[in-house]
Image 1: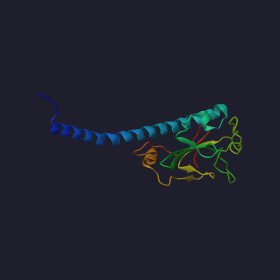
Image 2: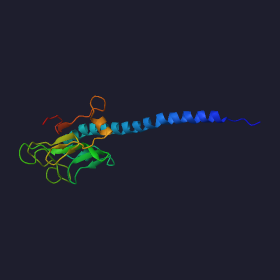
Image 3: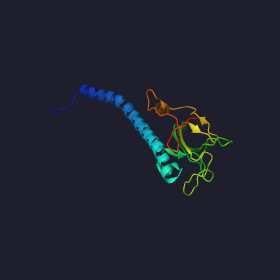
Image 4: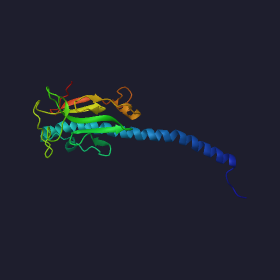
Length: 184
């Protein structure tokens, strides 16, 4: 006589496996998103520390010289400008940029551009209005005139990244390359 499982036993096993899959698969996807956001926050915190330190030591105002951001997730905002963005679902959620902190003129708070403020070859800071550039971290897109355009349709990941109560608690910051936070 052959020994085996009855049909009822097989059905119970399939039902139990289905319940486990229904619980585990969404949690696995959420864990992946959490890991991506944690890595992004690490990138940002590293950049906020490394870029001013690199500038102080080398007088080089280029972000990618100070910290190696993953270019598959971070995109250079505009050709020749010293700004990098992170997008989620097509919306720019985070911008990290070196800006020229002028106190006069139309270029006030403008993103540093190669050739105008930053030497494209060696990264030396050329603009002299305030002596040192400012590293800005903003939620959304940083426009050429320095205004911040918030994401039109923020995704769950973007909201989690900036949520100070329940999320990762990222905050907008302005840091002079002298390593001090500034407000404007």
